[in-house]
Image (cartoon, rainbow, N blue to C red):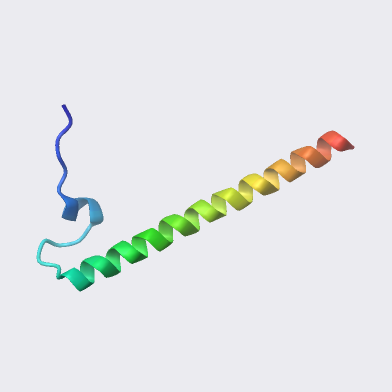
Length: 57
């Protein structure tokens, strides 16, 4: 069975952080994940277009 991890450790914040700091950190983390995901989607679309263009010619 896997060990339970501490939420603070997962988020990378101290246990003494107040709720405002936690909310700010989670918001930044979520924005970063969304940015990375959108970059990957753009790259996949670009790659797909290139391969379709290559197959058509």
